[in-house]
Length: 404
Image (cartoon, rainbow, N blue to C red; front, side, top):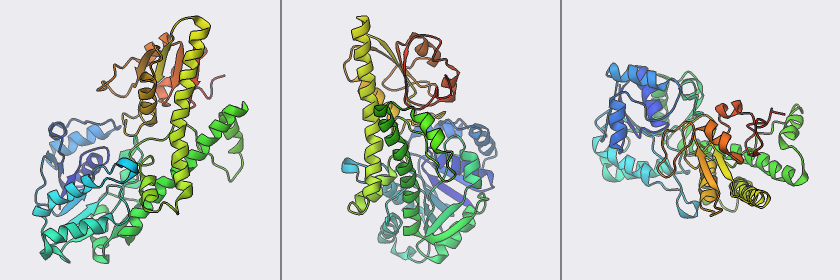
């Protein structure tokens, strides 16, 4: 079995590595020449615990190599971004481009799978594109949709152990896709059609977005009511059928902050709760900016000087290096651009460099800060003592929740 993975990002590369480790010959394709070069040197270009060791193993064994273009294989996997454009309309240009790139090398008996999160109907749309260019392949290849279900920071385990939903354009496509994934997935493989599988992925992340929005809305209410939201949630969660999530600075990442828009865009009249949750989570970031700007103004009035402000964390969730759709980064951009005159120190311990900002060590920044703004709950931040010095701490993500 030889497989070709189009896209070597946060999902494509780990999946390619796991497939290669299961004995599949894998060629990974990416348009970024630096990514191709690093993979072929067995160097990891993302942060994911344990993945560097596995990458070296499969590259050294010859089971994984990277290339800038697809080549003949038995199975093809589309694992590229699906961002949204203006008006939050889904942008399928990456999926379409990746699909078109493999059309010349497709042959009878091949398997074609889309893993990229996609609006309902995308798999059928890509099938039509394939058949339009290669009509002789109609009924001769298997086409399916199988979205990922992984948590950054625990990807290796979850790629293997999580259940998967596999939706094909026909029963033969489902069977062939299940046969491939059964090589390395020990979780249960559930069969359905492609449209249901596409909607399942969107539903999972929209559900999480709604739950986070409830927590974020509670934090806004509690701030106005003078109530500690963290204590409130701990107490409410003692109810046997209540499980309120943790509020934060908003919602980010390549899934939860994006996928709900694919439903809202297609079904605007029917998706009131989903659209409302997106609005709440987006507003939470704006609310955080307002809080920080007001804290800067209060400090200046009280001390007759501009404060030093440490923005702690830029990643979209704790202990990763992923900045995609990060509310922390949006907040940082807004504060830097607000023209307050404050000295802004930006902190992200999981990346070495940022294309626009100079990064400061988290201990140094916290020590210098007059105002420390906790935007991402990285575990290393919990070692800091907010009572060790007299700075104003705005803890939007519960870093110091347990400190008295």
